[in-house]
Length: 147
Image (tube, rainbow, N blue to C red; front, side):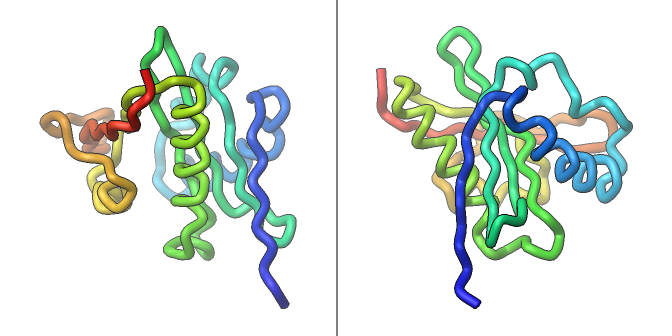
């Protein structure tokens, strides 16, 4: 069967019922992040991206813009579909959207184990690692032109 990838970008209210079950599976069930941590006040003002393969949701991410600063986060891919490029598809779609909106750089707060994922997309480490709960994070940025 030929694979058919589709990307959907929209508001949280438009995509909430689509993206949240996958985020809960990845962040709460797999990673053990305490319930509610990922359900923050930024969801409602962030642009959501959903990547579908043959009409099945396989990956999601969000783009948050606050006062001209752009952050990509909450990137989640089904465990069975990782390393197939779906997460990259979601992040690239949001990078392109941020560029269209005039971003000059984009920030991510990367978990230590996914630094190479972001490096492959052109992000570089821009600070020391830090902890949020038990998770080691590092800030990474990517220059995208714009402004």
